[in-house]
Amino acid sequence: MMILVEKMTAFLKKTVPVPIVIAVSSGIVVGGIFGLSIPLLVAAHSERVASYEEVAALSMVEDALRFAGRSHSEEAGFSYVTLPGIQKYDGPRLAQTMPIETKEAWLSWMSKNRNDDPFFLEERWQWAQDLVLTSELKRPEDVRAFLLTPREHFVRARNKGLEYANTWLQIGYGATITDPDVVSMMTSTLKVQHGDKVLEIGTGSGYQSAILSYLTKDVYTIEIIKPLFIETDALYRELEKSFPSYSVINRKLGDGYYGWEEYAPFDKIIVTCSIDHIPPPLLKQLNPGGIMVLPLGPPNRQYIMEIVKNEAEDGSITLSRRDVYNGLSVKFIPFRDDRGSSYSTPLPPEE
Ligand code: SAH
Image (cartoon, rainbow, N blue to C red; front, side, top):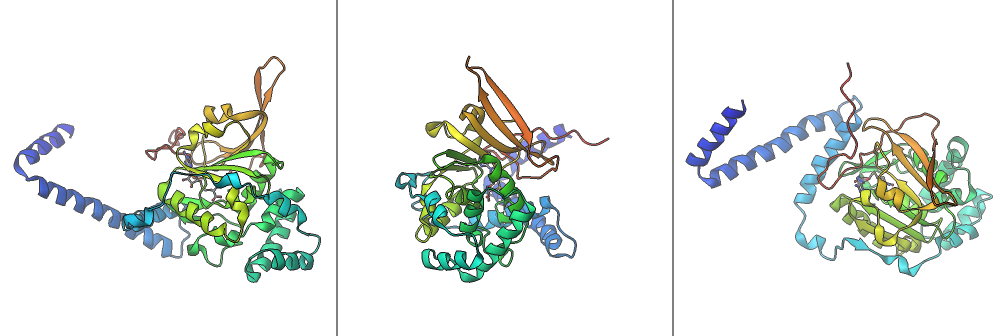
């Protein structure tokens, strides 16, 4: 078979002019994209619930096409690193002054001090009460952060009506906004203290870092998908006008596997993409006594693990780990390198 392909390639090289080869290959690529998108569109619109992979693949095709059509000027002003954090707006202090004893007191404070849509305030209050009852959202600081973060701005327009649904949602580019249950589980595991330096891997929608900005003034986040980075960076810039605490979120386009050496060490690290091992650079950049939370496991199933880095008096390092979801598995977007390959080894095929 290989010999046949080689012979054909050599023959084509000799006989077919370059423009025709380019035209034919572009035809195949474009045909491929549409060929893939039609079954995916059918799958997404049929009665059957499309699988996670189908939804992700569909959104990647959509976004590849959308982004390909973007003009260069839309990217003007784009920078690979946005470091607004020097302003150090005190989100945690704002959170502390907010009354949360009754819905009425909270609503009246929110309408005086913030710029939220009243419709979503009602939804957010009820949703947070439910999370406190059913999830790990218990620490008052975390509850306050959830009540202050307008999820409606992060879920993307395509998810209208599902802003406070208890589910993950696709946000484009094959990425998702994590479901609120898991966000509360991971956030509460970090036990963020005012003053902690926190690093997030996988900015995605921007929602997790927005929550963190009400817990500490030192937030760092890294995203690897360029158009998604640009979109969320622009969203933060826009939201900062009404919600100044997002000005403490330092953001970078890059491969989070290597952490953010320049600003290390971090007191807390949250990884929001799945991987079957702890990235050594991240472990190195975690302070002794620091906590890392990550979805650990092979590509199709992970467990949310809390890793605590302990340093003994003689300087030796030990790690303690805990499955914070008590054996319940989750499925996160893969932790990938800059060529799109997963950092995890796939499981062997089933017998
Ligand atoms: N924390 C996000 C969840 C996004 S899903 C939120 O609140 O919405 C996981 C994200 O991890 C995706 O956006 C994906 O592009 C990103 N990701 C995957 N590999 C990465 C890497 N090597 N470095 C940084 N981000 C990565």
